[in-house]
Length: 149
Image (cartoon, rainbow, N blue to C red; front, side, top):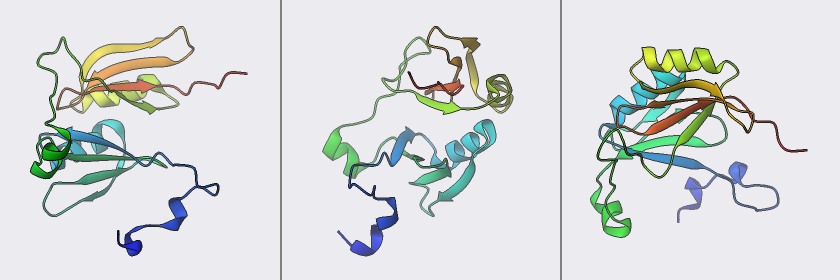
């Protein structure tokens, strides 16, 4: 691997792993990046010229987007399958944390997210609302959860 591509600034001091990326497989990278920026309030970090990779400014862990079907990835790990209906969901969900969950939920829906469940306080103490993105992925809009004592 080319050492110029590896940044020592992202390696933990004790060399433990760092959670770097969540990658969402989407139909249209540019459309998804624009949707997430508008609906959830993130700045666009980049969309490459080929529109096969996009990233948002999301803090320490990057949320990235890539096409659902890529020959090199599909050949290695298998094809991506999205839920077949609105009654199904993928085996992963993304949670974005906000100080004002109601406002964040409203913003997401006003900007094209599909409402699933309005924000409610859950038994574990988190206020959570659910929406679907333009590819049907479930997104949790939630409050911060205090760590256990």
